[in-house]
Image 1: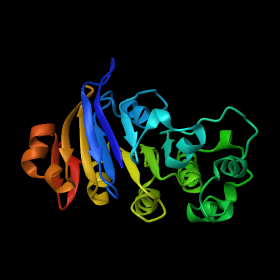
Image 2: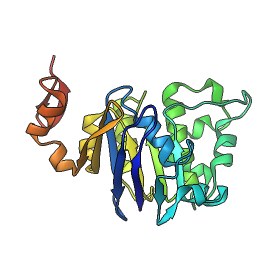
Image 3: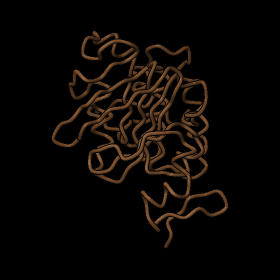
Image 4: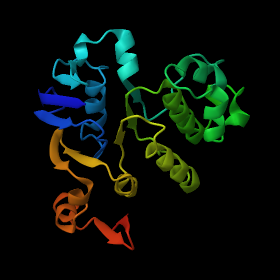
Length: 230
């Protein structure tokens, strides 16, 4: 499904990995590790000839093909038209899904915000609107950059359920949240200093010896949850 081979720039070093059909991925790493830079390479926002998607080099895709095959959802909603409403924003996002705009709004409890200007939304509301837009876009592969940032626990749970459901075709999740990564159960790619330090199964990543290697004594497991060891 996805392959990148020996890519490097001034931030990333010798990035090489692949995902088979049906495999999903969680990308973890500290701030500045290169996670978002890698995401932008994978979806073509930053040009590279090293990325292959569904058997075809990404730089050979037409604009329409790229919109059908891959979508990048940023960590923060940014609107350049101060008058555009949440509903109008979703109209622009509606591409390949059978969901209606009303259904997407209802799914994420956003119906009351349909006519509200996007610039007046809270950070959490903006995060949910981005998720709704990704469902309406419905690309074959969606990259979500920090999809649960700024959300309360109840909304985080709702988003986690959607991200692990069939509403999303294939997905790559970028997050700092170890508990979300563990719950999703996807393969893990862990980055540090622009390089890949770990790429393997979810089970191997969360083995105690591996967590100690990557995080030292800063993380501990408590009744099935991973917390900062203060």
